[in-house]
Image (cartoon, rainbow, N blue to C red; front, side, top):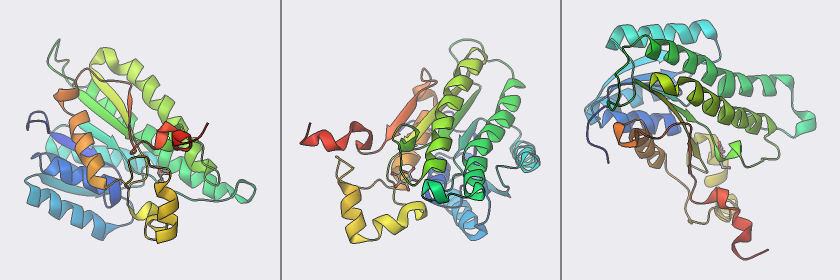
Length: 267
Ligand code: BGC
């Protein structure tokens, strides 16, 4: 684990449950100021805040739909006025609205693109505006800002019945890389974390059902479903100076799901 070095002020979208909540708690344990964004689950956000504070951090809760420009602007304004500055954005908020392709409604398509892709664009844009207003630190002193896009293995693994979700995640991959290229000269780092099957509410229908869980495990060579804390630890490291030379990269945290598991005894 990195030392408690550059863990300053972190804004995490969708931090009321699952991976976002675990990342918030992990940063709290580093003594960070954590801005906890949520959309609907106020109780979840309160639970996150409590855990952040218990871990030694400070926290602030702010409700916003990340797909709405004015709400995102208000979120960043609040975060920056409360803590004075912002160092890290964890672009995490994401939803699934699954459907067979021919039955997929425009609403199912639009809502997933809005939260999972447009939301990441809007939040990244506000973060970049803020980072660029900071003084350039010169050479060898670390980044002035850090953005981590929480994507999915489905930015490279096609997913039948989830075309809206996979399209948004595929979009995030090039959003992340193109942005990383654009802002690297300003000493802003931009990376992605792409989790595989992590046990959260988004997929509890699968991992809480023994038969479905057994089928899912066939896709995970490492033999276990991931825990949100696995991602929390990675996010802390990827946002720290310990990983200062990494930009424009995606780290797959998936127990080997992207290794073509069908080839373990085939081909
Ligand atoms: C999805 C989960 C799924 C996992 C692996 C994630 O991005 O949100 O529902 O279990 O990918 O397929």
